[in-house]
Image 1 (tube, rainbow, N blue to C red):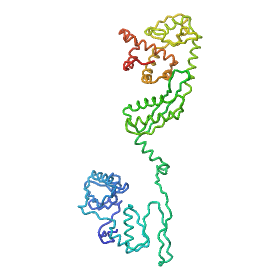
Image 2 (image 1 turned 60 degrees about the vertical axis):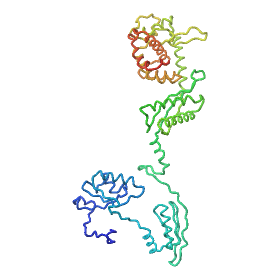
Image 3 (image 1 turned 45 degrees about the horizontal axis):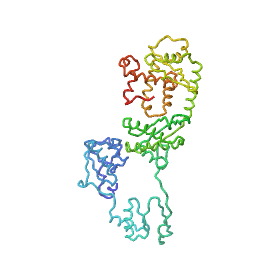
Image 4 (image 1 turned 60 degrees about the horizontal axis):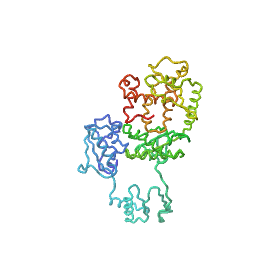
Length: 475
């Protein structure tokens, strides 16, 4: 329209076509003037480069005249748009040598001419870099304008009202400054500042990841042999490179180490802070990232009580069903292929230091003798079946690494006892530990005797994980 009014070109000689009617004409007969020289996201040319414009479709037969200069700061997105257009196939004509560009911005002399024609009493340059605004202000003063200034975003100015054209203005009056903030829209619901929508935190988590740690704390009782704090951990990560699980294993070890370094009577908040700091430092050394670490600790006060109840119950149960010959009872409770020494069973001693009494824990084997005296019938009800022993070996093998690192292992035996209970096998932690002790002893003896290695039915299951360790698994 401006070209036509200025006489640069008379478009009346051409037929102007609406965008929605372009499909009715041969593309060779169309000249399309469109927006998008700076690759604006919603401009037609940029949408056409993605193939997402309903009105403008480009092909190899088209010629694209890029009659613009790239504004500083837009180079990257403009080049990406031109690359997409090139991939579509049209011939692109651009550059200084093509003689296509004509600026829509006035030059120095043209700006000065406008000010001399208008002769304003007040001149306030807007829209542009501060450096250019200051230069424009100086240009206005050079033409005789008395009241000129430059303001920044948020500053407000007032101008006195002229009663008639003969009254001169008193100039600008400052009305203060408004503290503007960038506001963000996050969908249809959330709206607010960067702080309100946690924009920085979102970017940080996306870049460095986040770690969630849930830990259950077990404090030792005053008379317990446990020397330090122990805990069960569950670690969950997001947006972190785990190095095929190696980092996750290192996180668990670091968490246990951090907890064991805490004093026995320290509060949960101190444990959370220690674990958080250690894990963050470890990930930083491992991958150079600084993830957010959220640790939630809870204290388990029922473990010590449950152990006491279990031991008390076993002691009372034993007194009620104590056989006449405990040595013979223990001998019959152990499979034929495992009978070594009676000390492998759970023991309890009285205050006078008498000989330890063997608990009512026994194992049944397919090779065990089926004949037994009447005094041992009550203990047979609690014998271990082969499938129960195999389940115990499997569970103990899966937790072998934890047994090598954790000192207070009764908590782990309770976990194994709970896993067996889920399978319908009711065994106390003490029973599981006692049977495992017998299995270990038999395993060590079988390794020295090739015949036992072939005949003992549990050797392969035990050897599958114990042979991979540098030393025998501790009890």
